[in-house]
Amino acid sequence: MLRACNRLLRPAGRIAFYTIFIPPGLSRAEYRRAARAGPSAVTSHGRQQAELLRSAGFTGVREIDVTEAFLRATRAWYEARARYAVQLSQAEGEASFHERQRDYRLQARAIESGLLRRALFVAERPH
Amino acid sequence: MPRDKDTISRFHNRYSLPVTDAALAVEREVIGANVGASGYTTVAQADALIPELRLRPGTLLLDVGAGRGWPGLYLARETGCDVALADIPAPALAAAAKRANEAGLSGRASPLRAAANYLPFQSSVFDAVVHTDTL
Image 1 (tube, rainbow over the protein chains, first blue to last red):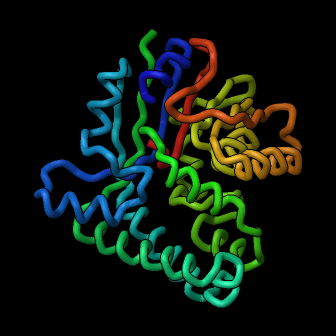
Image 2: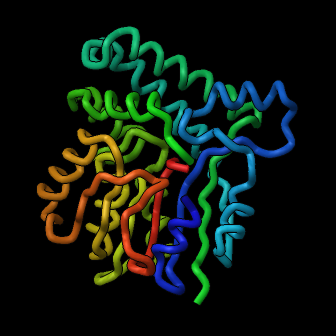
Image 3: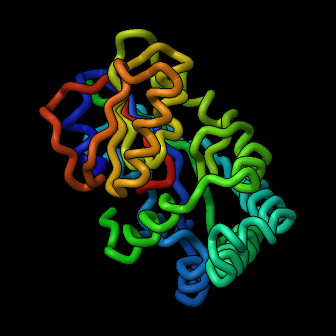
């Protein structure tokens, strides 16, 4: 996908994205726990995003960690949804509501344990 | 990264849910506004993208995995840029088109069905690309 984005950008065009990822250096058991706890769309590889951006042809790669804000948002989703449990259960279905709440709890624990991170990556297509 | 059928189905179902007052209240509390968000990018984090992407009137932005138009529509509204909103779930794209219309952005926002790993555009057409937790 990053190679495709590089192709679509004009020279000096910019890419910026927030992404959740499993940090390098975890044990196999920790990696499995992180993969289970993180959103399914964002945990399929552990390669560092900066490396992926460079190998896709981008330059000026910067990483800005936003893991603390990620933890705050995960907790906020859980807590705010809990306050509206009755209404949201009716709209989403009770099983689905409780599944999402469980996922937020697991994710918060994984972030607290250093198993999931989120960062803003910024890079540029060379001139 | 490729999205498997389960993931696509889950997002399709999630985007098909009715938008209730409770859901809007939760989104306002977590994200900071009602912008069609369901992830972790807050309004403050979307604002941080503007200088990084050097968005201004006349620039063309591609939002990959745009869902209901967050943050692409917001960035278009705040900066005057044009935006292409790419995603797969039809309910999300319909919501994005509705939001664009309501915000008076129909002429500058183009929702289209496209997967992140197959983006049907010509080379070197965009000034900026954004995505949030798609990769």
